[in-house]
Image 1 (cartoon, rainbow, N blue to C red):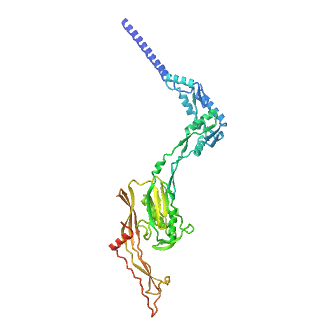
Image 2 (image 1 turned 60 degrees about the vertical axis):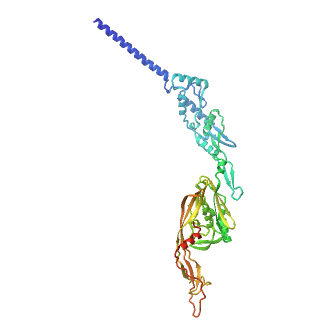
Image 3 (image 1 turned 90 degrees about the vertical axis):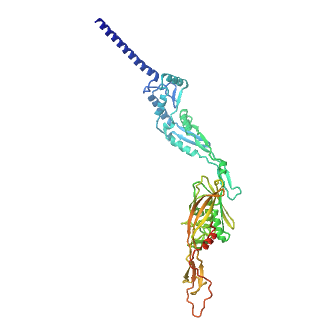
Length: 503
């Protein structure tokens, strides 16, 4: 029995000892965590000594106390705000009347409170000593205090900032040096972040004169790169030496509208819009034009030769053509499928600069030829473009039509039946295609079809008199020979190719 009692007493002592050890460990861990990891920030945490927010001393204050003091300061100072922003010879004013109080500064207070209250005791001690020695000065962003500031600042920035302007090409097509390089202009950009810091400091220091911080921005393009982007891309001429003086005048006048034109990247150009209405009031003269398969007098005759000359220069410069039309009759000054008929209201020549750089147009007109030259970014080294026309087939004419002069319109030519006057010869029609060839170092590396046209045939017209020949009268000899419907032969096609400069 005595032995059993001793054992029980021994076990009790051991249990008590273990309880004491566990309790000691638990308390030690709690104290260690509090010691090492620090306390959490709560509503009773205070700012360290020597802490200032927007110039207000918040040392030893809780967040709520600091918020009240700062709010009172901002509200009382609002009416005294009269900020002058300067940049060179310009000034802008912002007054308290322009602003509204919003007081959204809790995020800043939270940030300042966390500084020095997080981490272990060693870190906190190090930060608190640093703050006591050097001080902690924090400014609340001005847009979080007063509403309307951002709008005012953005308006001022909009008036002040300028985009950089790269080197510019000045085009004088009639001078010896056609291209001059104008120097670039630096842009002006406001350093917004720095400006906002200066404004926040100004509220604290009551220094309301601020020089707006400006950063100059250089354009990316330089003079040399621009000079390397100018070369003649194409030149095309048509002959008008046999035209009347008025027709020549109209061609020269229409092309003069394009002389010196600069077409920017992405820009579309309409021939009719540039040349204007073909009227006498606009300076155009009367000359032959094609209407309904006939040559008749019309104001602006010859303008189609101007548009055709421009069109061919454009396609040889690899400029994108958005709209082009052919005549009812082939134009004598270019191969088939390379004419460009224009007429107000229903036929235009429209093109677009799809290059990354401008293109430049120069026109030259003497008394014999009209020439258009296109300048711009050089074509690929060793590359030229060439036009090729292809005669698909001849569309035969239907021969002559004989009409009676019932209205006596041609009484000075014919009067009696059996008396004939040729008003018009029949003309064959054509189906044709136009191609552009890309030639590199003398070899064709690409060919693409750009046109497929039909020029419809025209019947001849013979006028016969309408009166019956009286008894005893004899008709004079008649040299007008009736032409029957055409039959197409190999010789016809050969002659047609030669006539229209087909390859």
